[in-house]
Length: 366
Image (cartoon, rainbow, N blue to C red; front, side, top):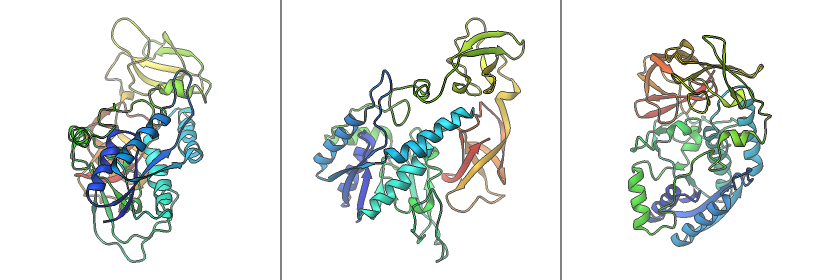
């Protein structure tokens, strides 16, 4: 058994993860990561309620409880990076950045410094041991805790619950971090986790899923970005006719393939087929088969592999959005070719590469 620091967000998943670790005999400490506490107009940040819920569960489990304050680092490494991506006209994924730079980097380092041997979270994923790497293998990168050395390789695997599987958001976590990580919920479904919470009388058993922006709560990206960027209204133009068919709040807020939120009424639905950030114009079309909405060739940037890169003859699949279907693909360097066209592939999003149930890594869509 190990001394484990478990990230407790105040939700049911991390609560059950902590309970399972206690029952397995680990020496468990609950940790709330205080990443964000600022309110947004019309929405109070729920952090105070969340930390109170997490502490109640920790008390009921009889475990120590601590708060790690990562607000400064989170603002710099996640929020500022997300805002910069939107400003450049791309659609980033802050959950991916948070896992890579905060939960499985800063949290792991802080936990190890305070005596932990392992960390754990309530993510729906699994870690399996792989081959033993060379003795001199070590990792020195901005995204990996160091000076840890690789004693045993780790493989990131899909969770049993395909609907809740969160490996899409974990694909940029480094192998060295996975070696020190436990995912207690990987073999359970969400309904089973809810049942376990109720059976144990956990305070968070009936708590609803958190939605919206990961670190703020029930607030839209439009409302959040409005605090950091100047959102200027502009024209929505039918690219096929050149006619303005509506107005938008800012071209920065739209992404390829988007249908909802256009406020363009009448007739067939419109889809976003392009945008020009410099001129603040959003282009739409009623043609669902518009070539700009479908891609078979995708270039990837900032590619990250958990272990070794895939081989040229590996049977690979790719997931281009959370809960999106796994699509057969071929990888040639940083070029990804899909077996069939995929709709609404947005620049800035993650393309996550799988080999069977194993998550190999991925890159950012260019």
